[in-house]
Image 1: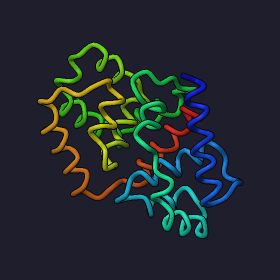
Image 2 (image 1 turned 30 degrees about the horizontal axis):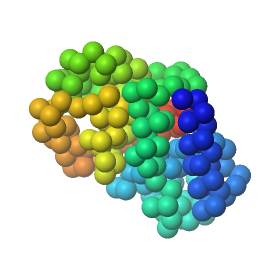
Image 3 (image 1 turned 90 degrees about the vertical axis):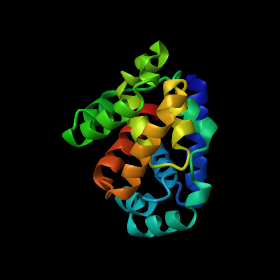
Image 4 (image 1 turned 180 degrees about the horizontal axis):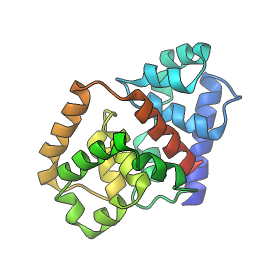
Length: 187
């Protein structure tokens, strides 16, 4: 799995290098590609992650930077291995994150009764990945990869959580911290 992760991080670095700059380190390349995958908030997130000039360029080419489903699965899926979970652990302990984690756990209550999903949910990186997945256009698929599947009865509740995310103002600082923590766990 480490070889898969390294190959994907290398591919993301190549995408960022060819579209933005080759002076961005691996961790920030992963974070930029994650940010590009969040269509509603990508411009604000680019503003946090990049200087003004690169942020404008990234906004114009964001669709070519997004994380593909297979890449998400290999980086953050149930069987993914991480270089470190220190930063994800710090972010998941923040008060601002706990309400999101609680809402997700409530929505996923049937899925989290499955032993594999329950074990995956215990990992801070998995909880952060599920939170970030809410902001993508493929949230159900991405969350299913993180947990190793979704129970059908959770779909409606998960849709409600996603609707709430879309209706309420985004905490871009928390979301950016989550992206950076996730990127540090795989690069």
